[in-house]
Amino acid sequence: MGHKTISRDGTSLAYDSTGDGPAVVLVSGAMSTGATLAPLAGSLAERGFTAVWYDRRGRGESGDTAPYDVAREVEDLAVLIDAVGGEAALCGVSSGGALALEAAASGLPVRQVAVYETPFTVYEGGKAEWAAYTERLTEALGKGRRGDAVELFLRLTGLAEAMIEGARQSPMWAGLEAIAPSLAYDAAVLGDGGVPRERLAAIEVPLLAVAGGESPAWMREAAQAVAEAAPQGSYRSLPGQTHMVEPQVLGPVLAEFFGA
Image (cartoon, rainbow, N blue to C red):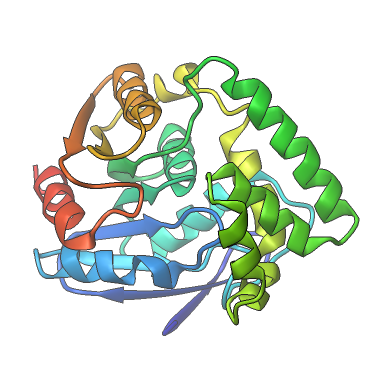
């Protein structure tokens, strides 16, 4: 990361940017750092935007300050927006979308907000499943069992047991354990797991919710529910895409929306 700024509670935030034009701040999801969104940033930069990616607190090169509160992450975004010109569009991917939506609802100087497959639960039993996950996650992290916390998350995403075991034996596992405590932050941002319709109704700027055409039906339904709950919400499905969306497919869609 090439730049640092300091959030209101003293937490150091690492960020980088590319391109020239209106600012778009990219918000990463669970078990990821800002670097995962660098390819998407490049796609937006090619289309006339200054794309900004950052390490959320507790990850990568950014610091962390206890106790955690979702409001502190909203303040992080406020400071970043100020650092890149005082106004920006937001794009949140996966659970990062929940943070982007909360920031927009909080009245930050945001032009537009776009989210890709924010994993709100819309299916029967979804909230109960989410509650069970967060309870087990809290227990594992409370006892310092970071590896178990990572396993819980990977299992929640539907990864097969053999693949989880393989991941445990891989060189990447240490990096996953290093940011495992931030899983609690994503859990907090997602709340009870349901679509926060009242909060979304407070978003006064244009909103775009996007999902992949090859993703599970509930992902598309969740994105549609987000769009429907926002006063200026719209929905779009990307044919052939999954949760691991291709930056060169999502980038043009975002550029069209942010350029409107």
